[in-house]
Image (spheres, rainbow, N blue to C red):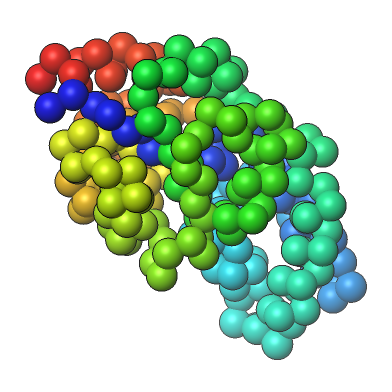
Length: 216
């Protein structure tokens, strides 16, 4: 069955947003006497959505300030979504080349932030659907958002592929029965991506992998 729908993760796959997320996290914790975190630390924490990100950053010892830190994060990040965020090399060119496919974004970032980020970077026009962690009742690695997205796009699992940098993307895709492509340049160690059908080192390689899927 030929591929009709390509589902993309956002952070770590289409865009490198690690600096802006780090800056927002450091703003969020600034009043509470906590040590600033590095971009590398942020990368190790992201992937499960914003609420979980704050929980992992603060731990159990500072659970009392989670709500305030989350509010401060959102206040800052909403105003600085794309100060330093840029598409990864080859992303825009590849999206141009994939004009005959339906394309969607499925992120564990909140939907409004995902849409605004893509608007700011002039990428939203490439996608028919942009969903975030709050678009459906569950988020990746649950297969539920993938399955709901397939319904929205009127595609069967054998007509879709998910592209992401995280084991959460691969787990969600496999559980939903769609083909999976992992990118090695994102936020997760490549050893966590071994269950993907393919691993690519550049988004430009995606078109070749789609040719393989379509020939099967």
